[in-house]
Length: 347
Ligand code: WQD
Image 1 (cartoon, helix red, strand yellow):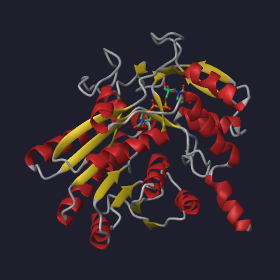
Image 2 (cartoon, helix red, strand yellow; image 1 turned 180 degrees about the vertical axis):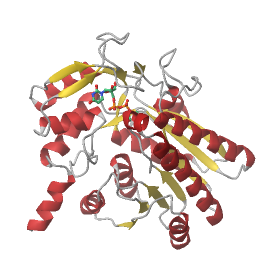
Image 3 (cartoon, protein in one colour; image 1 turned 90 degrees about the vertical axis):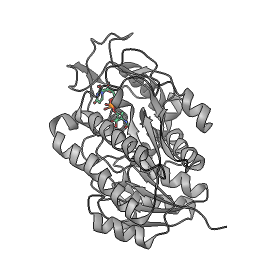
Image 4 (cartoon, helix red, strand yellow; image 1 turned 120 degrees about the horizontal axis):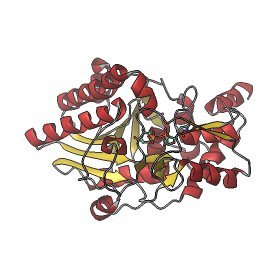
């Protein structure tokens, strides 16, 4: 039987690369589009190394429609999984137009190319940040949206475009997955989270700190109405997140638009996360309490009940698993994928 082919945009990124690994291990052909602005081709090479599989990679931007058209003409794509986007809350406050151009216009470009090629099955990377400052927790998919930053707003706008598309053209099958806070790495430590520049997300900052690349971590705010005053998030293992993607695509294509929370239902404060990292790494993590970060909200915790009911999906890994696996990647590769490249250069 011919293996189904998935096109993964942003497939060299943190979540995208883990998705490619999971798909290959589960019998899919994988084609990747990535502009490598915030990712490394080494992630792809590592996936091929540990699976023995091969990935066809196109170093292009989803903004380049002609290039995307050419990929869809060349490859027998059955489903598209769209990760390629900017994703940092704080960063988006400083450069909103880049976020709208990259995230919203990029999706529109991809949808036009898919429509032209007759490919109408999409799994879309959305975000819990669309809920904003939640009135009630845990958050269900029917909780009101209230984006508080351009990143979240861009994801919410994308969802509304997809709802509209599916309501007018019922032959489209679209599933939006609203991740909470992905963290961790594949257990092999061969791939992991390795953002360009100084990490804006706390988990890669903590793993880099434990690897000696930073002196201390700033805790953004300790005056939230939470048990210890620091903000609470629902951290979810990246392998649980990507398994949710595969289950979502294996249900479809079902006509119409659906959206699911991918979270654990467990909230963890920044200080609790730091303590967990100290336990896992056996190192003290120096921190300073500073002002809140603009665009942040006090608490985001998922109700994962709908994904469990419809997709048969449940997060299986714990915060300890996340911290252990994230640290395993960083301990093996203190400078991230650069180390792996340097090993290759010396071999
Ligand atoms: C987590 C908490 C910060 C850095 C992320 C992704 C976003 C979306 C949701 C998928 C917050 C605090 C952070 C630091 C800190 N995921 N913090 N010091 O903003 O929740 O968003 O998950 O779509 O794409 O970016 O994640 O890791 O930046 O922040 O105190 O140096 O840690 O204030 O409370 P965030 P984050």
